[in-house]
Amino acid sequence: MTTPSNLSTTGEHDISTTAERRAVVAQPGENPGDTWVIVTRGIKRDYDMGGEVVHALRGVDLAIGRNEYVAIMGPSGSGKSTFMNVLGCLDTPSAGEYWLNGQNVSQMSDDELARVRNKEIGFVFQTFNLLPRSTALQNVELPLVYAGVPSAERRKRAEGALDAVNLGSRMHHKPNELSGGQRQRVAIARALVNRPSILLADEPTGNLDSNTSEEIMRVFEDLARQGQTVVMVTHEPDIAAHARRVVVLRDGLVSSDERRAQFVARIHAGGSVHETAGTAGT
Image (cartoon, rainbow, N blue to C red; front, side):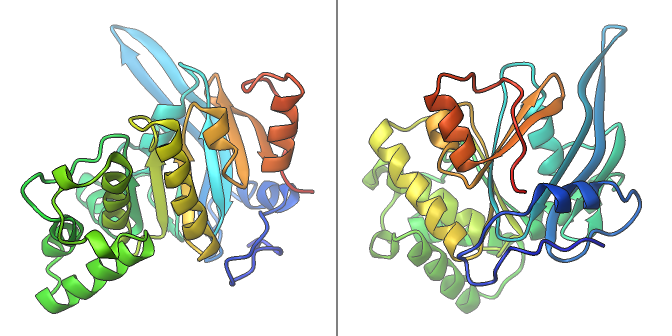
C-alpha cells in the first residue's frame, strides 16, 4: 500500500507525487488504502458499434488522493465522457480495476453500484436539475428523503450544505427566484448533503457566463480547502486552471498529468491543451 506523503488533513494540502501514484497503480489486486479516494488500473472500455469494436478507453491509470482537486480534460473522442461515467459508477469497465474509497467497484452489479453512487459520489452537472416548485432547502433535502433520513436531521444537514456554498440566506427561495450561479450552488449543496467521498462535476460551468463561472470555481476552491475531494471534467482551459492538478486524456489514455502551475505555464507559452506533456509532482 502506498500513501501520499504530502496531503495534509487541514485543507491546505499539496498534491500526490508522480512516484506515489505510479507505485499505487502498479499493484493490481491490492486495496490502495484509505488515503487514496480513486485508483484506476488499466481501465479499458470497449463498445460494439454495428460489428465494429470501438476502444473508448485503452488502459487508463489514475490515482487521486483524498482532498485533491483535479480537473480532467480531453478533446472530442478522447474518452473523457466514458471515463467520467466509469468514475461515477454509471458504467463498468471492460477490463481493469477501479477502486473507489477502498472498494473495488469494477465488476459490481447495478444494484451495488447504485448504493455506491448514493453513498460515495456527489454529482454536479451543467444542467441544474432542480425541482421548480420546491425551495432551495427542499431541493437539497431530496437525496436525504430517498435515503430515509429523519426530518429534523434532513433539515440540519441541508441547511449546513447551503451554508457551505454561501447560500444560507436564500434557502427558502425557489429556483425561479435565484440567479444561474445561485441555482448551480444549490445543485452543489445537494451533491454535498450525503457527505460523499468525491464531488464529481461534469462541465459545471457549461450553462454559465464567465463571471458566474468564476463564482462557481471559487465555491469549488473553498470546498477543496475544507478537505472535499473534487474531480471536475471540463473542456475549458481557464476553468481547468482552477484545479490543483490537470489530467488530459487523448485517444483513451492519459497523455499528461500536471500541476496547475505547469499547465498554466504551458498554455501561456502557446502549447496545446491536448499535447503530451509532463507529470504532476516530483
